[in-house]
Each structure stands twice: as C-alpha cells, then as structure tokens.
Image 1 (cartoon, rainbow, N blue to C red):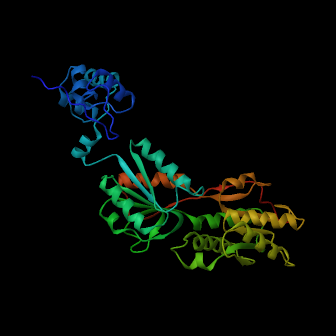
Image 2: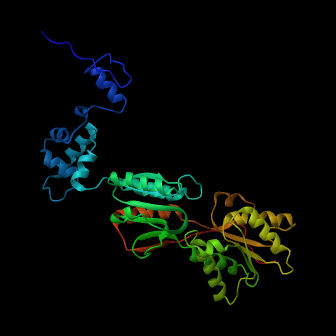
Image 3: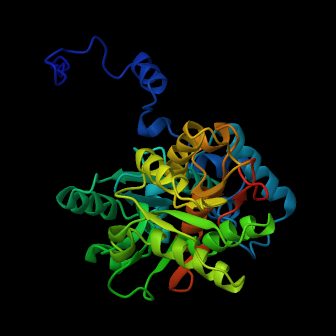
Length: 377
C-alpha cells in the first residue's frame, strides 16, 4: 500500500493547494525566488557555447592566456546573455575571498541633507566597479555602531568606509583595523598617518574666499563672522573651523593685511549670522566685505543687511563656505566654496578597493561664483 503524500503546512498553518507542480515553480519565478534547479548555471552556458565548463569559466572571469579563439569568447558571452546567466556570488567569494560589497558606516550622513553627496559619490563609484554599497547609520549610538560593524564584517565585505557628517577627528573602532578601512570626511585621533582618510581642503578654501575679495579690490575692511571656540579648539567637534580660519588669515597676511574684525557666534546658524552682521553694521568703520564660516551664517547676514537698508554686494560683499542648495536661490546668489562631497565619496571607494598611502587625501573646494561679491563702495 502506497502512503498518500504528506501535505506540509506553512508557517501560518495553511496547507498548499499544490506541491511540486509546474505552477509552483512558475509562481516562485514570478515572485523573484526561482528554485535552485531553475537557475542558469555555468554548465548551461558551457553547453550552449559548445565548450567545457572550465573554458567558459575562464572566459567569463576574464582570465588571460586561455588560448581560445575570439569566436569562442563570443559564443560564451552570447550564451550567457541568451540564458540570462548570473554568476553565483557566494561561490565566487569562496574562491576569490571577495564579495563585491563595501560597507558604509556613518553617524548621521544618510539622514541629513548636508552630507548626502558623500553617499551619492560612493554609490556611483561602487556601481561603476561592480560593487554594492551596504549602508549602516548609527545615529551616534556606540552600542548600535558595534552591532552594525559586526554585522557588516560578518558579511565579509571587501572594505569599510567609516564616515562622519561633519569634518572632524574620530576614534576608529578596533574591529575595523584588521581590514581595509578608509575614513571619509574625518581623520583619526590615534595615529593620523596610519589610515587613509578623505577630507575637504578647508584651508585652501579659506584662501580662495579671501582671494576672491582681494581680486575685487577689498583689503583693509574684510571681517569674519563665525568664530567659535568649541569648533576651533576641539577637533572631535570640527576640523573645518580652524583650517578655514588659517586659510583666511594666511591669504590676508600675504597681501599685507589682516582681518578687520572677527565676530564670535554660539553656533553656525542663520540667527547668529544675523546678529553678528547687525553688530558689524553698527560700527562707524563697517566692513566692505564679510567672510562667513558657513552658508547658514551668510543667510542671516543677508537679512541683517537688508533690514539696515543696505544691499549685497553694493554696500557689503559676502562670501562663505559649503554651497548649501539654498545659496543659489538667494538674491543675489551667494558666492561660496562648495563642499566636494561627491568627489570625496568616489575617492573613498577607490582607496578601499585599490589601496593607497596612509594619511589624508585633501579634495579641493571649488568657488561657486555668483553675484554676492563686487568692488567696495
């Protein structure tokens, strides 16, 4: 007596209507989950091309010295395309010890509009090199960061990009030091020369901001808005503040001049830029030009100039840093040094995959020349 087939219930307790039918396989394929024996294999490609499995593998993996004709190569590629062949990544990773994945671990890069270019650049570079970017954001939670890093390393990623939203100095988790790791928008506080890192060239940007003003005839009454002791004294908060200020002062010194006035701000926000500019405009020798330490300060400075019955750039020129999307929409458009986030993200991927010298890679910040700079009145 032949026993009836057992109907296995699913995890919801429901028995399937059919078991092992063609309909089941068709449904699985439509749902993106084809059964293992429905997957096109390397053997299928080799059979279609009329070659051995070893020969087909060598062609698809770009191995040199196969001694196969160009026509044989073409047959393999055509067979792979006709059959929709996709290589078994898991099997390949066992052979090559590469998974074609890169981990991108950050604090709040993904959820802020200010640093999204870091991810865009890394995504583009990874895709061009046939890699997938796995993104984990920690929100600054040390416990979750450890969990996220362990999860990435368990997946045997080919390397890790450890990123920060604000340019600053970081402590690198020890678990990352055993593999390929690149710091993005950050340096390390332990041994800055031991690890590759990619950061914007803020000092050169400070020089460029002043140079743009000097070229328009400003010299003796150039003020700075945005001095901030916390940002300048603590590299774990900011590396940009000190570097930008050094660039500003250096360019002025080379021109035989100095900063006319410096106004401190509790933070780099529009309301503080507004208050600082009002303070400067009350002075009898008000500045002819102002360098704001970021665009948000400049937004507030614009408002203070307008409320004083003056205008940018007729009465006071303004230049700043970051190239916030709103900068181009101000009236007049704000001249600003653009953070090169996309270029930085791309460079980080290159360093992860190709290796490179330790220490910082400085990426230039381009000046977006708009209408906020003119000769002094």
